[in-house]
Length: 202
Figure 1 (cartoon, one colour):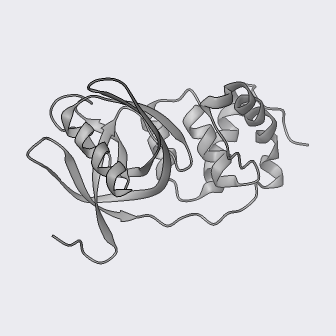
Figure 2: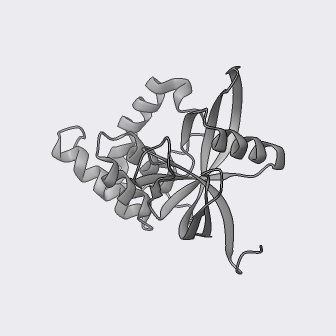
């Protein structure tokens, strides 16, 4: 069945985590529905969607996803033992779930509309105090946050902070849903200033 203009059918992997564009996420896949989904994606060179779970669990019956999620592109995979697939995925485009259905094997498949990509813009002068801390975190994480590192891109900087900050999942989800990348940086800056983790700006 074809999708309406401007939309696409996308298999979903609801998780208790939030994937951001350009972020990396290691996954362990063992349920048959997701093994089949990942195998199909690798064979066809396609992606799946990661959504934060709004209700339900990661294992068992299909969970109810938050309607805004992120495309997951498979970068690496390995099968260390039979029936267990390890993946490293990188976040692509954000999407909005318009409708979804549960297939016979329990896989959630959605009709999605891709959200506009933010234009690349530098971190404004008044938010530059965010950069040294993030640079030190990225250096400390090493291979867990692989390049490319785009410290000159406000969307990339905000997304990395949003996935690294010790905040509730619902707050992380709201940061994902923000279209204004400068507003996201301002929220992050205020959070860190309130906790004495950033130098003030002159």
